[in-house]
Length: 345
Image 1 (cartoon, one colour):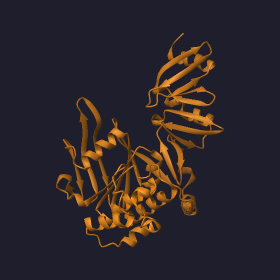
Image 2: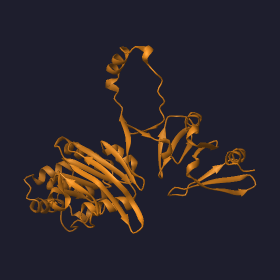
Image 3: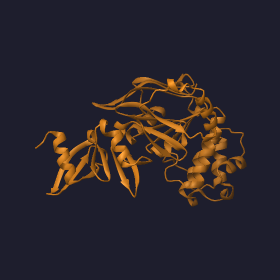
Image 4: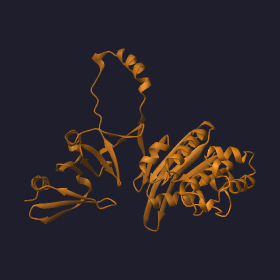
């Protein structure tokens, strides 16, 4: 049950948007796909049947998507039109009639924290309040499958709280939820499982919640292990913390690492993720993965370097092959080391 992608692939002319992948987002689960705008738009067009699925199949509750009743799929788009001349209550009543819903307007207003705005016209609401109207629409529709496009982009704290509580309720009701986003932090905060989809395929981002209440039982269980049987484990992923979750990144995913005021941050696809490791610790852990300490405050993944630029006799930079074409400083002494590594004189 839930949403199933089976051997789905998309090519546009001679370009690969994403290769064949399989993904199951079950009931009682919020799944996020972290991707570029192009990939997100392509997935949405497939899910809304705007473009045909030439390779693979998408199923909702084991029914091929072309045969699914549209009312069984609920979409919350980033840019979704509202009837600005209607009041909040009138807009919700319109949705209630459209979907023949039993839930009362008063209940919906309470769930999205708009009780005091019930008689205010939509055009006078803030951006965040209008997003709550969109969330309310899906609650009224009550589909089997919920699909959100960038649900927390540019929203205030109250609206984010409404969203998080709503997702918890959907989990409890056994609903399947898919979030499409280009923001890793949003994906981690809102979902149970996070996947990255790009031209290299679908890859799960490993997330671990902090379970401090389980520490005593874990220690008790570990005390029963014969210490003579314990073998050292080499752990190569780099942990970062996003709210109450720990995200583990494979070293090849990292573009570069920057230290600012004593805080080291991993830079991945244009986003920064703080890590508790020092630069010296990171340099030691990552050197056998092809990382290079190019500056006192920077460690770079040499596989991501596109150009080495000489500005002056003592000033150099590394240009990375990422979306931002990041410009990383290279110190004079490190330039000499890099030349040796590259076999240059």
